[in-house]
Length: 62
Image (tube, rainbow, N blue to C red; front, side, top):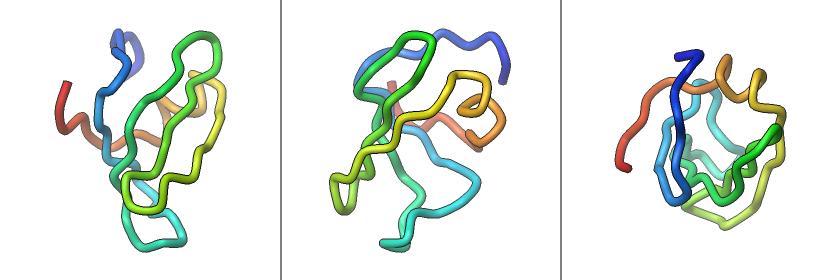
């Protein structure tokens, strides 16, 4: 999953779940860093694209 072009609003499933017991996130910012928002509790996480590519499990919707 290294060279995938993501879009804003894409929903992804991460390998590790959020403390609110869901692992479904929505991409809200793209660039060198990717910002994702938890669909359940609306908290945001900012991480480098390389780290994001390692932690993503599956793309649900585009």
